[in-house]
Image 1 (cartoon, rainbow, N blue to C red):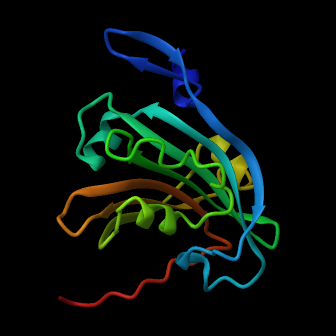
Image 2: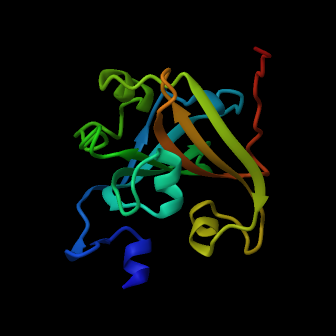
Amino acid sequence: MDGLVNEGLVVRFRGKGTFVAHIAATKTKIASDNRPSYFKTIPGKYRREVQKVAKVVISKHTADKLNVPDNHLASMLKMVHWIDEIPICSEAIFVDDFKWPDLFETKDIETRDIREIYRQNGMVVTKIQQSVSAIIPAPETAQRLALAPNQPVLFISRVGYAENGSPLDFRLIHCRGDRFVLAQDISSQ
């Protein structure tokens, strides 16, 4: 049962039971000119593949990042970013479902820019806090990114904040180190 929970196929509610998760979209391949800014420096044809849209009960770690109670319900979007038909990056985005219900469950999620979806829902990210490390990914992540076993990835844990300092989203990002370069402009305040 824990494996089904980890895969996002079932959700548990303390005191209520275990239920089948709502999954709105799976494995939809799209072409997009709306390349996220962190892929603009990588030449080639970009597309993203939405793998899963679901409501999930989040872990304590994710709840802490979103500043919500444990066992809280969140909207989750999982996708893979591709350049020249090579999977570059796997990304999972979590958003508080009580503040922004059904945020990712639009019929055109495959073609819409995530930043535009945020803006239309009053979500403006003004600050990002992230940590970056090299890790050996879980086997399913390695397979998703077409990596050899034990090949390291660049792991980015990222929280986007509103102007008032409240967290808007939490992202877990795995990027191929042989294809992705993290470039940042940092200014002193």
